[in-house]
Each structure stands twice: as C-alpha cells, then as structure tokens.
Amino acid sequence: MPSMTTPDAAHPLFAQALRGMGLDALNAQVRRFPDATRTAAEAAAAIGCELSRICKSLVFAADGVPVLVLMDGASRVDVDLVRKELGADAVTRADAALVRETTGYAIGGVPPFGHRTATRVLADRGLLAHDVVWAAAGDPHTVFPMAPRELVAHAGATLADVRERPA
Image: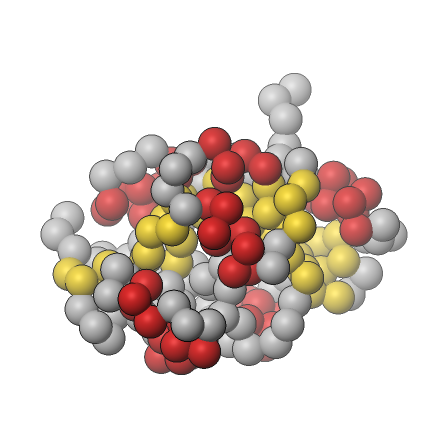
C-alpha cells in the first residue's frame, strides 16, 4: 500500500507538539496511508516492517489515574506487571472517552508523546531491541519512525518490563 509523506500529514495537535519540542524535522517523516493503520498489524503491513517494530501507545487506568504504556506491536501488556511497577491496587484498560480526554487523540492514533495532558509513561524494554520503531502520529492513518531510546526520552517514559510472557 503506497504512503505519502506530506508536511501536514500529522494530526494538528501532534504537529503542534512536535514544534513545541523542537522536533519540526520529524513532521517531515510522518507517513500517511489511505487505509487505516489503527492496529499494530495494519501498521506493520502498510509500512512493510516486522510487527515488533510498531510502538503501540496504550492508555490504562491505575487506581483511576491514566497511565500510558508503550509496547512493541508483537507483544501484549501484562496489567499485573504494570500494577506492580506503579504500586497500584488495580490497573484496567482505559475506555475511549478517557483515552481522548487524557491524550487528545482517538484509540488507534495515539502517539507516544505530544498529549493534551502530562501523563505517566511506562515503556517496555522490548522496544529497545530495534534501531527504529514506528508509532502513530495522531490519527489512525499516520505513522512516524524514531529510534526507540529517543522515543522513550521524548515521551518521558520509565523503562519497565511489562510485557506478557508466554505461559
């Protein structure tokens, strides 16, 4: 599936965040696809990369407080490990309304940083296995590439082991 790199490909809120972070050049690397890249599998297929090179941005509620977890596309988040990492009593997946309220974006397009509100971020160490990962740029049709360590730094994330392990 062909993609287009255009100066206005990123969601306006994300493009504004990039400017504010001094990452204007990154906006030029955003790729827009005609078909949705809402899921990690769709994004990997569109880009032509391994599923594990997709960075999912997933919002959870830890004792009711939003937390963003960055996870590679081939893995699932272990909510019990997130709970232990945060010292929370309960961790649940956030609903669509909380995701939009917290980040400013809809599920399937949440970028790893550039959110409406400051949110605690955990990044699974598995992301560091790659030289480049691809993440959403604010809507379900856009992605951008970035070195995982740089992505973790810009997200203000804490590295953690929160990936579900095979039984």
